[in-house]
Image (cartoon, rainbow, N blue to C red; front, side, top):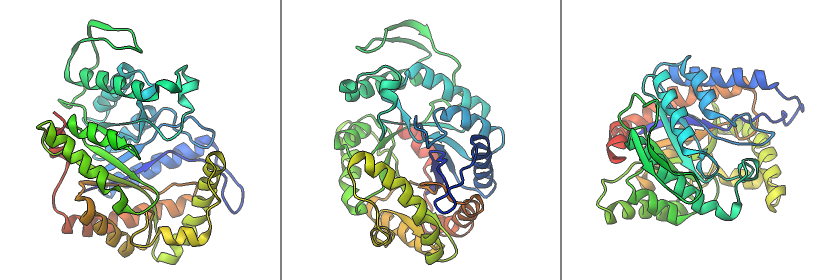
Length: 353
C-alpha cells in the first residue's frame, strides 16, 4: 500500500492564541512538511485546490513545482483539481510541466470539489456542474492519450488538429478521480479504468463500501482491469491517543464549525469528535498503533491500494505537524507495508490505460 499526506494548505488562526501565520510562513512550512515526508520515505504528497480565505492553495501545480525542486522521490498530486471550473488544456500543461520538473512524479486527482467558489469566480454556471465535469474529464483523458488533438464539446471551443505541449515524462500522466458521495462518479471512474480516491471524512467507513463495489463493477462491465482505490481521510498522530486528540480537536472544531455555519450543521462537540476517532469512526486520529489498527481495519473493508491522511484540518502548531509526519512515516508506515506488501504505482498506471 502507498501511504501519503494531503493538504489544502489551511492558514487559520491558532485556536488557542488567535495568532495566524503569514502566507509566506505557511508556504515555507508546507515545503518543510513535504521535504520531511519525502526524506522519511512516504509515497505521496498532495495539495487540494481551494479559492477561500482560509486556504493558500488556489494554484496547487505552482506549490507542487516548488516542492518538486526540494524533494527526490515522493509523488506529487493535486487533491483535488476542481475540473468543472478548469480548462483541461491548462491543467494538462501545468501537470505535464510538473512531471518534467519532478522527473516523472506528477499526478492529477480530478474531482467536482466540495466548495463552489470557483464556479462564479471563473464565470461558470452551477447549473452545468455535472455536465462541465464530465466534459472536461473527457477532454483531459483525450489530451493525455494524444499529442495531436481533435475534440469538441458543448462548453468549450473545439480543438482541431492542435498539438498539446509539453508532453509529460511519464507515458501516461496518472489521473485519479476523487469521489465523495456520488455513486455515479464511482461507477464512471471504474468504467473508464481510472483509479478512484474515496474521501471518508464522516460517518462509518463501511457505509462507503458500495462506492468501492460500484467502482469495481464499472470496470468489470466495461472490460477494464481492476483500477486502484485510495482512501483519503482526516487525521493526526501523536505519541498517545490523548495527546493526538487534544492537539487535533480544537483545529478540527474550528474548521468544521465554520463550514457547518455555512451549510447548516450543528457545532462539533468533544464527544462527537471522540466518537469519530474510534476504530469504526471516520477520523484517523490517535497513537501510531491506533492508526495502524484503523488503516488495517479499513483495508479489510475496501482492499485499497493507497491511503492519504489530511493532518491539517485547521491549523496545528508546526512542530506538532512535523512530529505527526515523523510518526506516520517511521512507526505507522513500516507496519502497514509489512502487513500489506502489494504496491500500486505500476499497477495504477497500467490500470489507467
